[in-house]
Length: 144
Image (cartoon, rainbow, N blue to C red):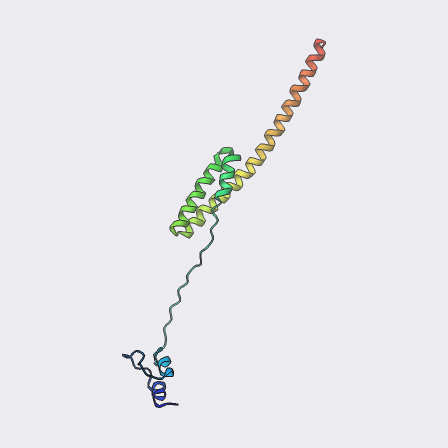
């Protein structure tokens, strides 16, 4: 071990000096970290990764255009836009809240839309069959 390396290892790195020109490479490497007996305090910072918050805007737009029974699709679209706005501002909790509400409204809009569409088709078929049978009955009674 060189004398300077031994002094750095025993005494610690000098506080006021930076790397010295012409100093051995091992001494420059040793100067970087201070050597002390004090406990090292660490701070942990949790940086949340870019959390993907789905805003359900496409689903809401679909429900607004095609399944807008009771205006649930339009209200879901409004909440989806609010969720996207909150996400752009950086309010992840607010974005998740609005996205959850939009998802719930989209589910209800889809379920009601499917049931009411199928129910409307069934009612129309029954009405068509009833009108057709009445028309046949009228034609038989009049002699056509």
